[in-house]
Image (cartoon, rainbow, N blue to C red; front, side):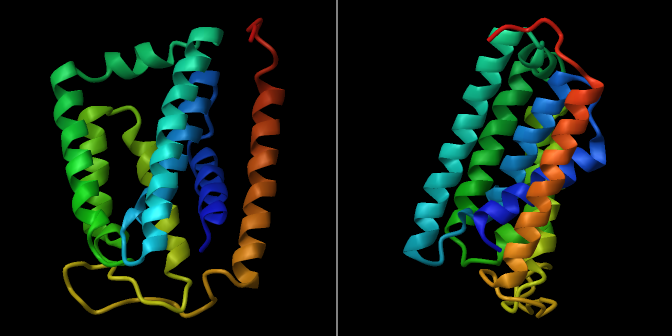
Length: 207
């Protein structure tokens, strides 16, 4: 599936699963789920994948900056919530593990390690070590990515390092089915955000 489809679906599924009840959880689930929904595509089988990796890294950095900006302007307590749930040593170890796993996965062929259960478990585990409160959002976003890619006609090594591939052979990654899933996910995501804003009206924040 295409990047925008993965992001829309990952965010929509994450919000649907956790149904956040405050602005802090809403932003954390949305942004972390988005990172989880795209991180699997950093593997570099082609030069295009390298471009995708740069885009994904930029998205991750932008998300972090967005969290810091929103927390500073709206006083949501997001940064405090993250830090309170992890020691600095844990965050350091978890971040190093996360980056190391990403560096390993980035050099593997597309749809292998980064699209496997091993990749899912190790990256979610390192996220849990670094930021325990964010791991669940990341995991759901990641799972949504793998689930969508199983629909493609190209195999992915779900049970890496076993070389036997797996796919449901339903559609092409850039075909009509991808477009339909992307549109539906975007509509659901918009409705979820609107529902949240309706239940959690303006709280006196100022940009």
